[in-house]
Length: 179
Image 1 (cartoon, one colour):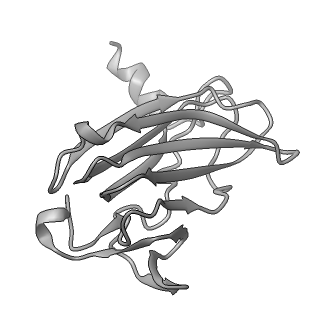
Image 2 (cartoon, one colour):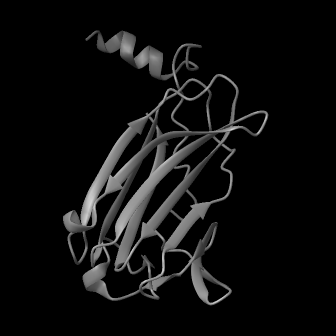
Image 3 (tube, helix red, strand yellow):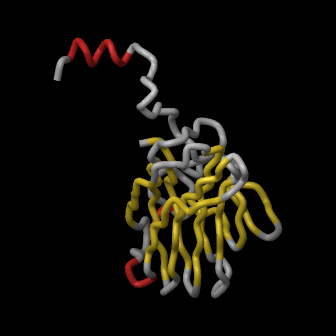
């Protein structure tokens, strides 16, 4: 690699064909910020959810002092989603969704990235699916996937998590970045 050329490119604006690194896109991504009451639930600030609450028991947290439990009322299904994320998104780019998830019971769990175009049409960019029997209790397992490319008229993205069936899922360290 020509290091002089590399250094020069780092100080220039991103060429039209590349995707800029805009940093972390997920709100309250480590769930270390505030949690707010929403009906009977405690939901991380910047997220919407049902049948979720804050987790503070260290054996269920991957990092920091807080995580989210989906399925605090068994056997009810549970969900957690961001609003539309518009700041920092770039059309035509690939996106990396990652998180740590563990849990108990046979519940299935999915993490999805949704692309939203300028007309409001939604397309599922991709899904990370965790079958109940493969969940690990405690701090869980790290999951990561690259989705894209985003549509040319991308206006926003949304992250959705769903727990279906009996059991609970502990979720922590959600991250969304441009690849």
